[in-house]
View 1 (cartoon, rainbow, N blue to C red):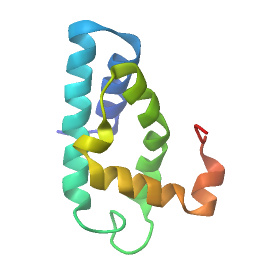
View 2 (cartoon, helix red, strand yellow; view 1 turned 60 degrees about the vertical axis):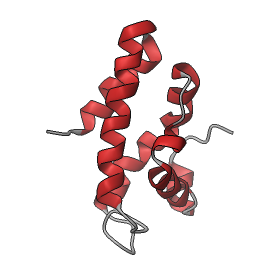
View 3 (tube, helix red, strand yellow; view 1 turned 135 degrees about the horizontal axis):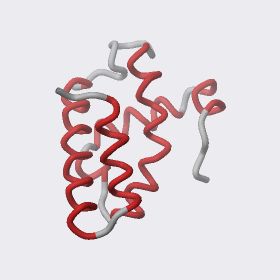
Length: 104
């Protein structure tokens, strides 16, 4: 069963480890993110055409994606392009962007 903590736990393994543990963290993270991407499908947001609860709950993870990719030497975008586009779309909403850290 998927849960939010799975992304967090796998992210910690990517950021804080090397070798086999880090590789398993990357694998677990991509597995979770692909599941989310499948649920998103071709919709703009998880609830359809408008930003909803699930979008708000998940979008804070997007600010960590760059760190995961840098430390783990992998690309979330190449594995989950729709999910990355969703995250960029959410960050394009002024109130969302104001409330989250921008890596730039």
